[in-house]
Amino acid sequence: MTKNKKDVGAIVRRSGVSFRVWAPFADRVNVSGSFNNWGELPLVSEGDGYWSNIVRGATSGQEYKFIIYNGDEKLVRNDPRALHFPTSSGTSVVAASSSSWEEDNFVPPAIDQMVIYELHVGTYNRPDPAINGTFYNLIEKLDYIKDLGVNMIELMPISTMLMDRGWGYAIDYIFAVESLYGGRHGLVSFVKAAHERGIGVILDVVYNHFGPDVNLDLWNFDGWHKENYGGIYFYNDWRAVTPWGNTRPDFGRPEVKQYILDNVRMWINDCHIDGLRVDSTIYIRNVNGSNNDPANDLPEGWELLQEINSISKKINPLSIVIAEDIAANDYIVKPLDEGGAGFDAQWELGFPSILKDILSTNDPKRISLSNLLEELKHTYNANPFTRIIFSESHDSSANGSGRLSEIIAPTNADGLFARQQSLIAAAIIMTCPGIPMLFMGQEFQQGGEFNDWQGLDWSRSERLKGITDAYRHLIALRKNTWSNSAGLSGAGLDVVHVDEINKVIAYHRWKYGGQRDDTFVVVNFSDCSFEKYEISFPRTGLWRLRFNSCWKGYAPDFKGITVEDVLVDKESGVFVLPPACALIFSQD
Image (tube, rainbow, N blue to C red; front, side, top):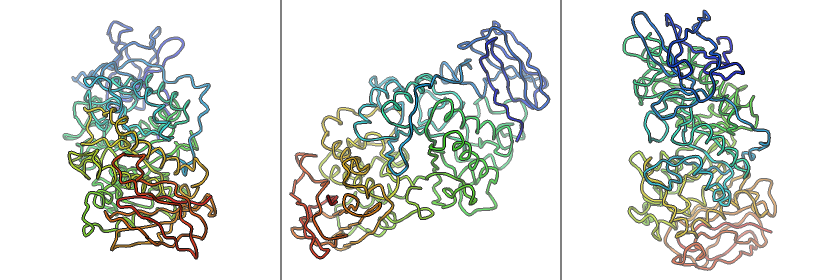
């Protein structure tokens, strides 16, 4: 690793602004900006590829660019570490790197208490359909999110994008916050407002590729490159190739690795982000995105993942770092001292498709419970809290697919069947061991397919308020808000009943065991009602009904079949089991 270059970029000083940039193959580098009427002030070579100088009198808010000379070639470049751009394709702007955090004493919830809510800034709350949503629009909805019971918000990528709209995964400058979202100031305001309400913030970051447009400024940054590859920031051979273009960063170059690790430091230290979700880690550790493929592994990529986790924990030991790896590899979440990558958790990508398969049909013959049972029981390294479990995400709700409610009932996402089935999915996610995650709008049956140009239909949150209440109740049970369902935040799971004929399962959840801890979940996937269904409960005594997904209070057109508390004698309990329904019981 090269010597630490903490002051790379434009750093505001008392006497002016210091500029430092990495351009190892440049013959000369100048800085030009509004502070010198766009003239050219030479930077001084430091002899190790870095160039620097101080511009006296320069200050925050002024625009600038680097002028790089390589032979006869003159390159006008934005700062790779610029903290702000007035527009997505604008000019670098000098900005202060830190904010005032004196009153921010927020402590993230324990992992076993986390409920994550993934959202896209541009479409979550968009009052004007023609304009991107902003961090300030998000702040307007924070009380709603808090009331729902969510305590961690996961933002899809917010770094400056190549287009004025997008999911956020085509990143141009990783240090700058998208100006159309409100820029760095908007992000900090949002994080502070979230923390004030007891909500942490996780940020989705993209290090597996940059761009992918080859017009981005990092491409051939200082004029050097091999063949048709990207120069100093990228691999310049077969290792550059990704599904998103030939723009994989060169993780083996110390300066590129430092570039990424300093970005991690910025989010957690300067912006008080409480966790990171690292996109497509399998393409960081393997050229082809393959598991158990030594010939195409990137050892330096694996080392980068380890260092991301090491640095994150050094800055904030309570931060959570999540991988999206797709390979279900235990080593992703093994501790660093055991040779693992050191992530706290990884996305459990099998859940959405399994739930879609089961819940999108009302033909019992097409319902197979075996895959679901495997998913319920699956853990990494015998720790269920190393996985993020969900029924919807930005990926599962797009890319040729659709939101769960849309898959269940195409063009009728808020119909009776879709609502019943969606609540079953929500009940499973909130009662299964792991860290549950919701995707924006699923709590009020947002239909269609996720995209970056349509805002959520917030009228549904009022029209389908009962469904949102059901999610609120499930989250409260998951977090043991009423001190009668502690088992849902525990690691204990025992699937005690599997009825493949009638399509009914039941499982016991516990943390320490005992009253107000042991929790019992029964799910009927069929459209059949049973007047007297018998199941063995964990112990004798009175088991009180805590949740009934068919309750008429959630929707007036639900069948509303009454389910009573169950008095268990000799371990078996007999009760009414409504069709297409999830029930949750526990003891006082």
